Image (cartoon, rainbow over all chains, first blue to last red):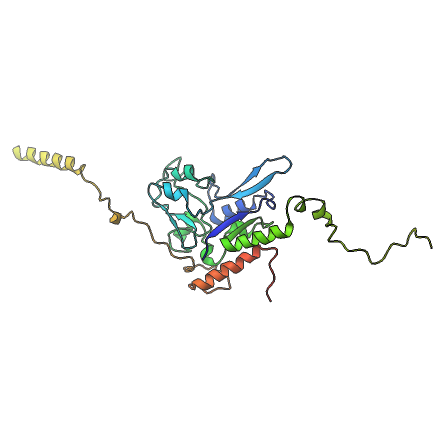
Length: 211
Length: 79
């Protein structure tokens, strides 16, 4: 199996934060921790874009490289997970991650900096799949239920794609080829149809026609 | 008197040397990684998605590929 990946389509994301809400609800993520968040570039300006960001489950994950207690591991599907029983909450992974994915709760075992929490691609942790212990520490394990991450599956505009990297890349590619680029994506043609899409009317208007 | 003093000194020595104790720092001391169960073995979850056979890796992978197509606006419907 190829690696599990997320792709966020900036042309489609409408900054509704539905993915963030779905993640928080699905895993009962505590206050102060956002496994996923929506980042908006050029907010309020023409051409602003939003993308949904979480752990990207890197193939060569810098968090894994810097962790002093080696609490990270990668599943056969390429999902980067960690063991909260091993984590010491040092924060090195947070400094190393280019996406700001590692989150630290503001209360818990280590006071102001608790054990790290991050997106699990809805794949839980090292505890038994679907167990109460796994849910309490890492949230739902949707992958083992034959489902994909909640954030991607409930995205209303299908901006956030999640799943097998090859499959989501194919979906994204076919989408881009269909919608075109630049003004072909958003503009007059999108709203009212492109000139090439319209057909010539079969009945010519007779009004005003001189006989 | 002397016996009491020697008992106290033995206790002091025992406590002092206790600080020299050190946990073994080998991998087998409990710090080894836990083995995670593969995703295609769902345990006893009651929220399984229909359409695949729990415990069958091929079936699970096919299920995830099929489910991913729900995100595809341009998917060709299969009959």
